[in-house]
Length: 206
Image (cartoon, rainbow, N blue to C red):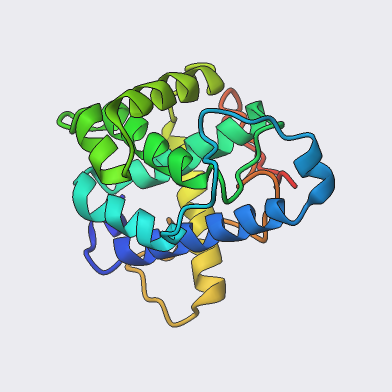
């Protein structure tokens, strides 16, 4: 979308996405009942990374050089992943690896030119071998459902913009009707998307 090409908008989008992911991770961290039923996956670190989610996403934004649309698509992928893998909710132990993997997969799917796994591994602070494993596991976790229809893309953008405007009313977008992302979220990030329906009724997954 045109708004995403605005240099002043993308840092705000990145900042809000990191804030959203932080809320989701912290919510799942304190959900002790859920923690007992969580699976340990290749995305889980032994300890919480010392770098904050916001600093990590800003680092990805700085060095990945992928198109702005990739961050929205990565957001869609993370939502799909959490919906398809309910035993692997986003938390402080896996959010960083899920982030770097989702952005890399989105860049490969969306952009004509993109960096290889070794480069993303350096950006993410992991080994190339681990990056390769994360990519494969993420793709299988998504069921290789990578296509994002224009309607789905617009819906996630609209949801993101709505939330951003609610939290920061002073933000000025050129077209406030087209970018929206949602309310306080728990296990899942956003809403279930039914791409076979043209009207796509969104429901927050909590």
